[in-house]
Length: 563
Image (cartoon, rainbow, N blue to C red):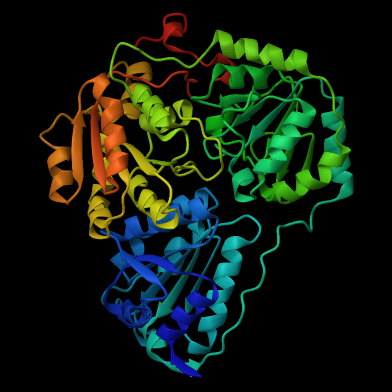
């Protein structure tokens, strides 16, 4: 049957099982929105307050479900407003398809109104991107975009469609989506045997889990693997939930704000096993001293990540879940209880702690964990609150911490929270932000109230850009250049003005009852919690320092640093 290009776009989305789209209309994409109007009983479109919010919502939807998130925007500023969200998804390997419309083919290259080369702009921050100038290429391109986004190392794909293509007529025939198989073609038995050999010989193995483990749905295999070899397990920010945070083998996050048990354990181990992790600088600290006593083996879907930041002794290239399935029969069960107890002693000696006498971010996170019984989906913005959320909430399952890891995007949280809640309506979904981050995306509270999406937004308000100020305190002689936010902004009034219920908490004893009420209301709620501007995230590793030299508050004097 013959359809317009816009109708073909909608039919292709339906082919791919898409039932949710986030976006913002405009002139060049009007034909597509007209087609969406006719299919609103099949595809629900959420109008965000800003295109960046649409990109983050699609990202949050994808992280919470494992499916492809979809966002749309018009040409020019609409398309460029997606860029930060696309880059966020790219850095964290999140499958998103962004559909933009451009000026008609005859207007390209002529500085037409709202014309932008969005394909050129996004080339470095997409897994692949396309511009469709001919109607016959439209359906195959959209199908290919979904396939690319989901296969191998996942990532965002942008499809830009000229306006004349959205209006043109062409024959359409439905095509069932191709099955996306895990990447196994580069897995060799020789590589598996070599890595298994290192594991079987190790006396002090340590497992380091990254975001790739979540993307491959490898949680069950990792649990079996860790207990079979008897190894402690740490994770990166992106890997949280891939291994149960309440498991006796779990030692906490590794890296700049990781636990001393993880950082010292990795330093002492004789074998580090990296599962779907890329050895980010925030994990390794000084790469020349990272895990210096250990052989390193790496399992990753992307060969480009092997030997990029640290040198490995052996590796297997392939989907983490599939590699572990093949490797588990080759692993010998060895009693490593002495090593496990050694790491547990470090953990007992250096627990995470904070000031129990004051209202603090960690206290709020711990209470949130108690109130939700660890069964919520937590989204975060970026900064101190993000690290506290990683440290003090125990993530028992994958896809329950959604956070911008690679790009570190302030303004990510509310959009991602909306996307996650739309995807997981039966879950409590909470976004944790600082006041600096919340300023960047608080307009999306209006999106939540427009559709009555019952998210809970916690704002830890310390009236500063907390993490930047922490660095200024520790490394810049307390020169607080442009990090003070002592102004007249009232987040409670702003939230109420956008139609949300809002609370301001100033006392510890009010935290738990307010959180319980906020969740029980089942409407959009903003909870502002007033905390001290001098609260810091500890432990911490100094820039380019060794993770073995992570310091806590009590170590500051010994390190020659002043709080």
